[in-house]
Length: 436
Ligand SMILES: Cc1cc2nc3c(=O)[nH]c(=O)nc-3n(C[C@H](O)[C@H](O)[C@H](O)COP(=O)(O)OP(=O)(O)OC[C@H]3O[C@@H](n4cnc5c(N)ncnc54)[C@H](O)[C@@H]3O)c2cc1C
Image (cartoon, rainbow, N blue to C red; front, side, top):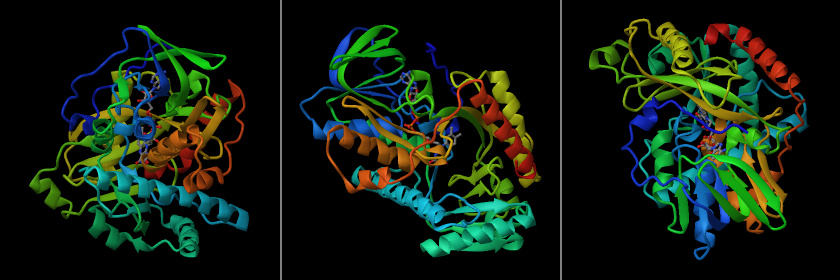
Protein backbone atom coordinates (compact mmCIF):
# COMPACT_ATOMS: atom_id res chain seq x y z
CA UNK A 1 0.00 0.00 0.00
CA UNK A 2 1.19 3.55 -0.74
CA UNK A 3 1.43 6.01 2.14
CA UNK A 4 0.19 9.31 0.84
CA UNK A 5 -2.28 10.83 -1.55
CA UNK A 6 -1.39 14.29 -2.81
CA UNK A 7 -4.03 16.14 -4.77
CA UNK A 8 -3.64 19.38 -6.66
CA UNK A 9 -5.32 22.36 -5.01
CA UNK A 10 -6.45 23.97 -8.24
CA UNK A 11 -10.01 22.80 -8.80
CA UNK A 12 -12.38 25.71 -9.50
CA UNK A 13 -15.38 23.95 -7.96
CA UNK A 14 -13.54 23.55 -4.66
CA UNK A 15 -11.99 27.00 -4.81
CA UNK A 16 -15.49 28.49 -5.19
CA UNK A 17 -16.23 27.38 -1.62
CA UNK A 18 -15.25 28.97 1.70
CA UNK A 19 -12.18 27.26 3.18
CA UNK A 20 -13.13 24.61 5.76
CA UNK A 21 -12.48 25.17 9.48
CA UNK A 22 -12.04 22.71 12.39
CA UNK A 23 -10.15 20.07 10.44
CA UNK A 24 -9.31 17.14 12.74
CA UNK A 25 -6.44 14.78 11.95
CA UNK A 26 -6.16 11.38 13.66
CA UNK A 27 -3.28 11.85 16.11
CA UNK A 28 -3.91 9.11 18.68
CA UNK A 29 -5.57 5.72 18.90
CA UNK A 30 -9.35 5.60 18.78
CA UNK A 31 -12.09 3.02 18.55
CA UNK A 32 -15.65 2.92 17.30
CA UNK A 33 -18.61 0.76 16.39
CA UNK A 34 -18.47 1.87 12.75
CA UNK A 35 -15.59 3.09 10.60
CA UNK A 36 -16.20 4.52 7.13
CA UNK A 37 -13.12 5.05 4.99
CA UNK A 38 -13.51 7.72 2.29
CA UNK A 39 -15.53 10.94 2.66
CA UNK A 40 -16.95 11.53 -0.82
CA UNK A 41 -20.63 11.16 -1.76
CA UNK A 42 -20.54 7.44 -0.84
CA UNK A 43 -18.88 7.74 2.56
CA UNK A 44 -20.78 10.89 3.55
CA UNK A 45 -24.13 9.29 2.67
CA UNK A 46 -23.23 6.12 4.57
CA UNK A 47 -22.19 8.22 7.60
CA UNK A 48 -25.38 10.29 7.49
CA UNK A 49 -27.54 7.18 7.41
CA UNK A 50 -25.64 5.36 10.18
CA UNK A 51 -25.70 8.51 12.31
CA UNK A 52 -29.49 8.59 12.02
CA UNK A 53 -29.83 4.84 12.64
CA UNK A 54 -27.54 4.67 15.68
CA UNK A 55 -27.60 7.97 17.59
CA UNK A 56 -25.89 6.30 20.57
CA UNK A 57 -23.07 4.61 18.72
CA UNK A 58 -19.73 6.06 17.74
CA UNK A 59 -19.19 6.39 14.00
CA UNK A 60 -15.88 7.53 12.53
CA UNK A 61 -15.59 8.84 8.97
CA UNK A 62 -12.01 9.23 7.81
CA UNK A 63 -10.33 10.52 4.66
CA UNK A 64 -6.79 10.73 3.35
CA UNK A 65 -7.38 14.30 2.17
CA UNK A 66 -9.99 16.93 3.00
CA UNK A 67 -13.52 15.52 2.96
CA UNK A 68 -15.25 15.89 -0.39
CA UNK A 69 -12.10 17.03 -2.16
CA UNK A 70 -11.54 13.79 -4.08
CA UNK A 71 -13.56 13.05 -7.21
CA UNK A 72 -16.79 14.11 -5.46
CA UNK A 73 -15.74 17.76 -5.40
CA UNK A 74 -13.94 17.76 -8.73
CA UNK A 75 -16.28 16.10 -11.23
CA UNK A 76 -18.22 17.62 -14.12
CA UNK A 77 -21.52 17.92 -12.25
CA UNK A 78 -23.83 15.83 -14.47
CA UNK A 79 -26.44 13.97 -12.44
CA UNK A 80 -27.33 11.47 -15.13
CA UNK A 81 -30.53 9.62 -15.95
CA UNK A 82 -29.16 7.68 -18.92
CA UNK A 83 -25.89 6.68 -20.53
CA UNK A 84 -25.35 6.30 -24.25
CA UNK A 85 -25.56 2.98 -26.06
CA UNK A 86 -25.82 2.24 -29.74
CA UNK A 87 -28.92 0.11 -29.66
CA UNK A 88 -29.56 -3.44 -28.53
CA UNK A 89 -29.93 -6.59 -30.51
CA UNK A 90 -31.28 -8.76 -27.68
CA UNK A 91 -33.94 -8.43 -25.00
CA UNK A 92 -31.36 -9.46 -22.42
CA UNK A 93 -29.12 -6.49 -23.24
CA UNK A 94 -32.13 -4.17 -23.13
CA UNK A 95 -33.15 -5.58 -19.77
CA UNK A 96 -29.65 -5.00 -18.44
CA UNK A 97 -29.72 -1.36 -19.65
CA UNK A 98 -33.10 -0.90 -17.97
CA UNK A 99 -31.69 -2.18 -14.67
CA UNK A 100 -28.87 0.35 -14.92
CA UNK A 101 -31.34 3.15 -15.71
CA UNK A 102 -33.48 2.11 -12.70
CA UNK A 103 -30.44 2.66 -10.48
CA UNK A 104 -29.81 6.10 -12.04
CA UNK A 105 -33.43 7.03 -11.37
CA UNK A 106 -33.07 6.08 -7.71
CA UNK A 107 -29.82 8.10 -7.62
CA UNK A 108 -31.57 11.23 -8.90
CA UNK A 109 -34.41 10.72 -6.44
CA UNK A 110 -32.14 10.46 -3.43
CA UNK A 111 -30.06 13.54 -4.32
CA UNK A 112 -33.28 15.48 -4.96
CA UNK A 113 -34.66 14.37 -1.59
CA UNK A 114 -31.41 15.38 0.12
CA UNK A 115 -31.30 18.88 -1.33
CA UNK A 116 -34.96 19.42 -0.51
CA UNK A 117 -34.67 18.15 3.05
CA UNK A 118 -31.57 20.24 3.85
CA UNK A 119 -32.45 23.23 1.62
CA UNK A 120 -29.19 22.89 -0.32
CA UNK A 121 -28.20 25.40 -2.97
CA UNK A 122 -26.01 23.52 -5.46
CA UNK A 123 -26.97 25.34 -8.69
CA UNK A 124 -29.45 22.56 -9.49
CA UNK A 125 -30.69 22.84 -13.08
CA UNK A 126 -33.05 20.30 -14.64
CA UNK A 127 -31.94 21.26 -18.13
CA UNK A 128 -31.17 17.75 -19.40
CA UNK A 129 -28.00 16.95 -21.32
CA UNK A 130 -26.79 16.49 -24.88
CA UNK A 131 -24.96 13.53 -26.40
CA UNK A 132 -23.28 15.33 -29.28
CA UNK A 133 -20.89 14.67 -32.14
CA UNK A 134 -19.24 16.68 -34.89
CA UNK A 135 -19.44 13.63 -37.17
CA UNK A 136 -22.56 13.35 -39.31
CA UNK A 137 -22.10 9.57 -39.49
CA UNK A 138 -22.77 9.37 -35.73
CA UNK A 139 -26.45 9.97 -36.56
CA UNK A 140 -26.74 6.18 -36.80
CA UNK A 141 -25.56 5.68 -33.19
CA UNK A 142 -27.90 8.40 -31.94
CA UNK A 143 -30.87 7.06 -33.91
CA UNK A 144 -30.35 3.61 -32.36
CA UNK A 145 -30.02 5.23 -28.94
CA UNK A 146 -33.20 7.17 -29.60
CA UNK A 147 -35.00 3.85 -30.24
CA UNK A 148 -33.79 2.53 -26.88
CA UNK A 149 -34.96 5.67 -25.10
CA UNK A 150 -38.35 5.57 -26.84
CA UNK A 151 -38.88 1.96 -25.77
CA UNK A 152 -38.10 2.92 -22.18
CA UNK A 153 -40.22 6.08 -22.28
CA UNK A 154 -37.45 8.69 -21.85
CA UNK A 155 -38.24 12.08 -23.39
CA UNK A 156 -35.60 13.17 -25.87
CA UNK A 157 -34.99 15.02 -29.16
CA UNK A 158 -32.58 14.63 -32.05
CA UNK A 159 -31.06 17.97 -33.08
CA UNK A 160 -28.86 19.12 -35.93
CA UNK A 161 -26.24 21.80 -36.49
CA UNK A 162 -28.36 24.99 -36.71
CA UNK A 163 -30.39 24.25 -33.64
CA UNK A 164 -27.24 23.23 -31.75
CA UNK A 165 -25.52 26.47 -32.71
CA UNK A 166 -28.42 28.40 -31.19
CA UNK A 167 -28.51 26.34 -28.02
CA UNK A 168 -24.78 25.81 -27.40
CA UNK A 169 -23.15 28.80 -29.05
CA UNK A 170 -20.84 26.64 -31.17
CA UNK A 171 -21.20 25.17 -34.64
CA UNK A 172 -18.72 22.40 -33.82
CA UNK A 173 -21.46 19.80 -33.40
CA UNK A 174 -23.43 18.39 -36.32
CA UNK A 175 -25.77 16.06 -34.51
CA UNK A 176 -26.96 15.59 -30.94
CA UNK A 177 -29.55 13.85 -28.87
CA UNK A 178 -30.96 15.84 -25.98
CA UNK A 179 -32.40 13.90 -23.03
CA UNK A 180 -34.71 15.87 -20.80
CA UNK A 181 -34.06 13.97 -17.57
CA UNK A 182 -30.47 14.87 -16.65
CA UNK A 183 -29.55 17.55 -14.11
CA UNK A 184 -26.55 19.86 -13.98
CA UNK A 185 -25.22 21.00 -10.61
CA UNK A 186 -22.21 22.36 -8.74
CA UNK A 187 -20.49 19.22 -7.38
CA UNK A 188 -18.43 21.13 -4.80
CA UNK A 189 -21.49 22.80 -3.27
CA UNK A 190 -23.33 19.47 -3.14
CA UNK A 191 -20.58 17.56 -1.39
CA UNK A 192 -19.85 20.45 1.01
CA UNK A 193 -23.50 20.43 2.07
CA UNK A 194 -23.19 16.72 2.88
CA UNK A 195 -20.23 17.49 5.16
CA UNK A 196 -22.12 20.34 6.85
CA UNK A 197 -25.08 18.15 7.84
CA UNK A 198 -23.19 15.17 9.27
CA UNK A 199 -24.93 13.96 12.44
CA UNK A 200 -23.21 14.85 15.73
CA UNK A 201 -22.27 11.26 16.52
CA UNK A 202 -20.17 11.08 13.33
CA UNK A 203 -16.51 11.95 14.06
CA UNK A 204 -14.75 13.22 10.97
CA UNK A 205 -10.97 12.80 10.66
CA UNK A 206 -9.26 14.26 7.60
CA UNK A 207 -5.77 14.22 6.09
CA UNK A 208 -5.47 10.77 7.67
CA UNK A 209 -4.49 8.04 5.26
CA UNK A 210 -5.39 4.40 5.93
CA UNK A 211 -2.12 2.52 5.49
CA UNK A 212 -3.12 -1.00 6.39
CA UNK A 213 -6.03 -2.93 7.80
CA UNK A 214 -6.44 -6.43 9.24
CA UNK A 215 -9.23 -8.38 10.85
CA UNK A 216 -8.81 -10.55 13.93
CA UNK A 217 -11.87 -12.40 15.23
CA UNK A 218 -14.63 -9.76 15.52
CA UNK A 219 -12.39 -6.69 15.40
CA UNK A 220 -10.89 -4.76 12.51
CA UNK A 221 -7.58 -2.99 13.13
CA UNK A 222 -6.70 0.00 10.96
CA UNK A 223 -3.29 1.68 10.91
CA UNK A 224 -2.88 5.34 10.01
CA UNK A 225 0.31 7.40 10.05
CA UNK A 226 -0.27 8.86 13.53
CA UNK A 227 -2.71 6.48 15.15
CA UNK A 228 -4.77 3.32 14.99
CA UNK A 229 -8.51 2.74 14.95
CA UNK A 230 -10.24 -0.40 16.23
CA UNK A 231 -13.72 -0.97 14.86
CA UNK A 232 -16.48 -3.56 14.87
CA UNK A 233 -17.68 -2.81 11.35
CA UNK A 234 -16.10 -1.07 8.39
CA UNK A 235 -17.42 0.41 5.14
CA UNK A 236 -14.92 1.02 2.35
CA UNK A 237 -16.00 4.05 0.31
CA UNK A 238 -12.68 4.89 -1.34
CA UNK A 239 -13.85 4.34 -4.94
CA UNK A 240 -10.76 4.79 -7.17
CA UNK A 241 -8.60 3.62 -4.25
CA UNK A 242 -10.44 0.38 -3.44
CA UNK A 243 -7.86 -1.50 -5.39
CA UNK A 244 -4.93 0.04 -3.47
CA UNK A 245 -6.50 -1.14 -0.21
CA UNK A 246 -6.81 -4.68 -1.50
CA UNK A 247 -10.60 -4.49 -1.85
CA UNK A 248 -12.01 -6.55 -4.71
CA UNK A 249 -8.71 -5.97 -6.52
CA UNK A 250 -9.55 -8.35 -9.32
CA UNK A 251 -12.72 -6.45 -10.16
CA UNK A 252 -11.84 -2.74 -10.25
CA UNK A 253 -9.08 -0.43 -11.41
CA UNK A 254 -8.45 3.32 -11.14
CA UNK A 255 -8.59 5.73 -14.07
CA UNK A 256 -7.31 9.31 -13.87
CA UNK A 257 -9.33 12.11 -15.47
CA UNK A 258 -8.28 15.73 -15.92
CA UNK A 259 -10.46 18.78 -16.47
CA UNK A 260 -10.12 22.53 -16.89
CA UNK A 261 -12.45 25.46 -16.28
CA UNK A 262 -12.32 28.93 -17.81
CA UNK A 263 -12.81 32.16 -15.93
CA UNK A 264 -16.26 33.74 -16.21
CA UNK A 265 -16.79 35.00 -19.76
CA UNK A 266 -17.05 38.77 -20.09
CA UNK A 267 -20.32 40.24 -21.43
CA UNK A 268 -18.62 40.76 -24.78
CA UNK A 269 -17.30 37.19 -24.96
CA UNK A 270 -20.64 35.79 -23.88
CA UNK A 271 -22.42 37.83 -26.53
CA UNK A 272 -19.95 36.57 -29.14
CA UNK A 273 -21.17 33.03 -28.56
CA UNK A 274 -24.85 33.97 -28.61
CA UNK A 275 -25.55 34.15 -24.84
CA UNK A 276 -26.65 30.52 -24.48
CA UNK A 277 -28.44 29.20 -21.40
CA UNK A 278 -26.58 26.69 -19.21
CA UNK A 279 -25.92 23.40 -21.04
CA UNK A 280 -23.96 20.15 -20.76
CA UNK A 281 -22.62 18.00 -23.59
CA UNK A 282 -21.41 14.41 -23.30
CA UNK A 283 -19.48 12.85 -26.18
CA UNK A 284 -20.89 10.18 -28.47
CA UNK A 285 -17.42 8.59 -28.63
CA UNK A 286 -16.30 7.55 -25.12
CA UNK A 287 -12.94 9.35 -25.25
CA UNK A 288 -14.39 12.58 -26.67
CA UNK A 289 -14.81 15.74 -24.57
CA UNK A 290 -17.36 16.39 -21.87
CA UNK A 291 -17.99 20.12 -22.11
CA UNK A 292 -20.31 22.32 -20.14
CA UNK A 293 -21.43 25.94 -19.92
CA UNK A 294 -22.06 26.72 -16.25
CA UNK A 295 -24.79 28.85 -14.79
CA UNK A 296 -22.24 31.64 -14.20
CA UNK A 297 -20.85 31.54 -17.78
CA UNK A 298 -17.74 29.47 -17.25
CA UNK A 299 -16.79 26.66 -19.64
CA UNK A 300 -15.69 23.33 -18.21
CA UNK A 301 -13.96 20.73 -20.35
CA UNK A 302 -12.81 17.20 -19.56
CA UNK A 303 -11.14 15.38 -22.42
CA UNK A 304 -8.60 12.95 -20.94
CA UNK A 305 -8.98 9.54 -19.27
CA UNK A 306 -5.90 7.45 -18.67
CA UNK A 307 -3.99 4.91 -16.63
CA UNK A 308 -1.82 7.05 -14.36
CA UNK A 309 -0.48 6.93 -10.80
CA UNK A 310 -3.71 7.71 -8.86
CA UNK A 311 -1.83 9.11 -5.86
CA UNK A 312 -0.36 12.15 -7.53
CA UNK A 313 -0.18 14.11 -10.77
CA UNK A 314 2.62 16.69 -10.92
CA UNK A 315 1.97 20.26 -11.99
CA UNK A 316 4.00 19.70 -15.18
CA UNK A 317 1.89 16.67 -16.11
CA UNK A 318 -1.30 18.55 -15.35
CA UNK A 319 -0.22 21.51 -17.47
CA UNK A 320 0.40 19.16 -20.39
CA UNK A 321 -3.18 17.96 -20.17
CA UNK A 322 -4.48 21.52 -19.78
CA UNK A 323 -3.02 22.28 -23.23
CA UNK A 324 -5.33 19.61 -24.69
CA UNK A 325 -8.21 21.26 -22.89
CA UNK A 326 -7.30 24.69 -24.22
CA UNK A 327 -7.28 23.25 -27.75
CA UNK A 328 -10.65 21.56 -27.10
CA UNK A 329 -12.21 24.90 -26.10
CA UNK A 330 -10.57 26.74 -29.00
CA UNK A 331 -11.95 24.18 -31.50
CA UNK A 332 -15.45 24.88 -30.29
CA UNK A 333 -15.15 28.58 -29.52
CA UNK A 334 -12.41 30.04 -31.79
CA UNK A 335 -13.54 33.59 -30.97
CA UNK A 336 -12.55 33.25 -27.28
CA UNK A 337 -9.04 34.26 -26.13
CA UNK A 338 -6.29 31.62 -25.70
CA UNK A 339 -5.54 32.34 -22.06
CA UNK A 340 -9.05 31.87 -20.75
CA UNK A 341 -8.49 28.74 -18.62
CA UNK A 342 -8.47 29.57 -14.93
CA UNK A 343 -7.83 26.18 -13.38
CA UNK A 344 -7.02 22.57 -14.23
CA UNK A 345 -7.22 19.54 -11.98
CA UNK A 346 -7.16 15.76 -11.91
CA UNK A 347 -9.46 13.26 -10.23
CA UNK A 348 -9.67 9.50 -9.82
CA UNK A 349 -12.56 7.25 -10.73
CA UNK A 350 -12.96 3.53 -10.51
CA UNK A 351 -13.91 1.25 -13.37
CA UNK A 352 -14.99 -2.35 -13.69
CA UNK A 353 -14.71 -4.42 -16.83
CA UNK A 354 -18.44 -4.57 -17.57
CA UNK A 355 -19.33 -1.14 -16.05
CA UNK A 356 -21.24 -2.78 -13.18
CA UNK A 357 -20.92 -1.16 -9.79
CA UNK A 358 -19.59 -2.80 -6.62
CA UNK A 359 -22.08 -3.08 -3.74
CA UNK A 360 -21.09 -5.88 -1.45
CA UNK A 361 -20.96 -7.46 1.93
CA UNK A 362 -17.47 -9.00 2.05
CA UNK A 363 -18.20 -10.64 5.40
CA UNK A 364 -20.41 -9.86 8.41
CA UNK A 365 -18.37 -6.78 9.30
CA UNK A 366 -16.82 -5.56 6.02
CA UNK A 367 -18.81 -3.71 3.37
CA UNK A 368 -17.91 -1.89 0.17
CA UNK A 369 -19.60 0.37 -2.38
CA UNK A 370 -18.06 2.02 -5.44
CA UNK A 371 -17.22 1.97 -9.16
CA UNK A 372 -19.81 4.27 -10.69
CA UNK A 373 -17.97 5.32 -13.81
CA UNK A 374 -19.49 8.71 -14.78
CA UNK A 375 -22.56 8.44 -12.56
CA UNK A 376 -21.19 8.71 -9.03
CA UNK A 377 -23.12 11.84 -8.03
CA UNK A 378 -26.43 10.00 -7.94
CA UNK A 379 -25.32 6.41 -7.68
CA UNK A 380 -22.62 7.11 -5.05
CA UNK A 381 -25.13 9.00 -2.90
CA UNK A 382 -27.58 6.11 -3.28
CA UNK A 383 -25.04 3.34 -2.70
CA UNK A 384 -23.60 5.05 0.38
CA UNK A 385 -26.98 5.20 2.04
CA UNK A 386 -27.99 1.71 0.98
CA UNK A 387 -24.71 0.01 1.96
CA UNK A 388 -25.20 1.48 5.45
CA UNK A 389 -28.69 -0.05 5.51
CA UNK A 390 -27.36 -3.38 4.25
CA UNK A 391 -24.63 -3.33 6.91
CA UNK A 392 -27.42 -2.81 9.46
CA UNK A 393 -29.03 -6.02 8.18
CA UNK A 394 -32.11 -4.21 6.91
CA UNK A 395 -33.73 -4.74 3.54
CA UNK A 396 -35.07 -2.14 1.10
CA UNK A 397 -36.55 -2.05 -2.39
CA UNK A 398 -33.53 0.02 -3.42
CA UNK A 399 -31.15 -2.77 -2.35
CA UNK A 400 -33.20 -5.22 -4.42
CA UNK A 401 -32.87 -2.93 -7.45
CA UNK A 402 -29.14 -2.47 -6.90
CA UNK A 403 -28.55 -6.18 -6.46
CA UNK A 404 -30.62 -7.11 -9.52
CA UNK A 405 -27.80 -5.78 -11.70
CA UNK A 406 -25.00 -7.90 -13.14
CA UNK A 407 -22.01 -8.29 -10.85
CA UNK A 408 -18.63 -6.91 -12.01
CA UNK A 409 -16.64 -9.40 -14.03
CA UNK A 410 -13.15 -10.67 -13.22
CA UNK A 411 -10.11 -8.74 -14.46
CA UNK A 412 -6.80 -10.29 -15.57
CA UNK A 413 -3.80 -9.82 -13.22
CA UNK A 414 -1.01 -7.28 -13.76
CA UNK A 415 0.77 -6.56 -16.06
CA UNK A 416 -1.95 -7.84 -18.44
CA UNK A 417 -4.62 -5.58 -16.89
CA UNK A 418 -2.74 -2.30 -17.42
CA UNK A 419 -1.66 -3.39 -20.87
CA UNK A 420 -5.24 -4.30 -21.82
CA UNK A 421 -6.73 -1.06 -20.42
CA UNK A 422 -4.06 1.09 -22.09
CA UNK A 423 -4.62 -0.62 -25.45
CA UNK A 424 -8.38 -0.14 -25.16
CA UNK A 425 -7.97 3.55 -24.26
CA UNK A 426 -5.60 4.11 -27.21
CA UNK A 427 -8.14 2.51 -29.54
CA UNK A 428 -10.97 4.65 -28.14
CA UNK A 429 -8.79 7.76 -28.37
CA UNK A 430 -8.17 7.09 -32.05
CA UNK A 431 -11.85 6.71 -32.90
CA UNK A 432 -12.71 9.81 -30.87
CA UNK A 433 -9.85 11.99 -32.14
CA UNK A 434 -12.10 14.54 -33.85
CA UNK A 435 -14.23 14.86 -30.69
CA UNK A 436 -11.51 15.75 -28.18
C1 LIG B 1 -13.00 14.92 -13.71
C2 LIG B 1 -14.15 14.05 -13.28
C3 LIG B 1 -15.40 14.21 -13.87
C4 LIG B 1 -16.49 13.42 -13.48
N1 LIG B 1 -17.73 13.72 -13.94
C5 LIG B 1 -18.81 13.13 -13.37
C6 LIG B 1 -20.13 13.60 -13.68
O1 LIG B 1 -20.33 14.56 -14.42
N2 LIG B 1 -21.17 12.96 -13.10
C7 LIG B 1 -21.00 11.94 -12.21
O2 LIG B 1 -22.01 11.41 -11.70
N3 LIG B 1 -19.76 11.49 -11.88
C8 LIG B 1 -18.67 12.07 -12.42
N4 LIG B 1 -17.42 11.68 -12.05
C9 LIG B 1 -17.28 10.55 -11.13
C10 LIG B 1 -17.67 10.92 -9.69
O3 LIG B 1 -16.97 12.06 -9.29
C11 LIG B 1 -17.35 9.73 -8.76
O4 LIG B 1 -18.03 8.59 -9.23
C12 LIG B 1 -17.80 10.02 -7.34
O5 LIG B 1 -17.19 11.16 -6.84
C13 LIG B 1 -17.49 8.84 -6.45
O6 LIG B 1 -17.75 9.21 -5.11
P1 LIG B 1 -17.09 8.40 -3.94
O7 LIG B 1 -17.50 9.01 -2.67
O8 LIG B 1 -17.39 6.94 -4.10
O9 LIG B 1 -15.52 8.53 -4.17
P2 LIG B 1 -14.54 9.78 -4.01
O10 LIG B 1 -15.21 11.06 -4.13
O11 LIG B 1 -13.37 9.48 -4.87
O12 LIG B 1 -14.12 9.65 -2.49
C14 LIG B 1 -13.25 8.64 -2.05
C15 LIG B 1 -12.42 9.20 -0.94
O13 LIG B 1 -11.61 8.15 -0.40
C16 LIG B 1 -10.44 8.74 0.08
N5 LIG B 1 -9.40 7.71 0.22
C17 LIG B 1 -8.82 6.99 -0.74
N6 LIG B 1 -7.89 6.14 -0.23
C18 LIG B 1 -7.90 6.35 1.12
C19 LIG B 1 -7.17 5.79 2.19
N7 LIG B 1 -6.24 4.84 2.01
N8 LIG B 1 -7.41 6.26 3.45
C20 LIG B 1 -8.36 7.22 3.66
N9 LIG B 1 -9.10 7.77 2.66
C21 LIG B 1 -8.86 7.34 1.41
C22 LIG B 1 -10.09 9.78 -0.98
O14 LIG B 1 -9.26 10.78 -0.43
C23 LIG B 1 -11.45 10.29 -1.38
O15 LIG B 1 -11.80 11.52 -0.78
C24 LIG B 1 -16.30 12.40 -12.48
C25 LIG B 1 -15.04 12.23 -11.90
C26 LIG B 1 -13.98 13.05 -12.28
C27 LIG B 1 -12.65 12.85 -11.62
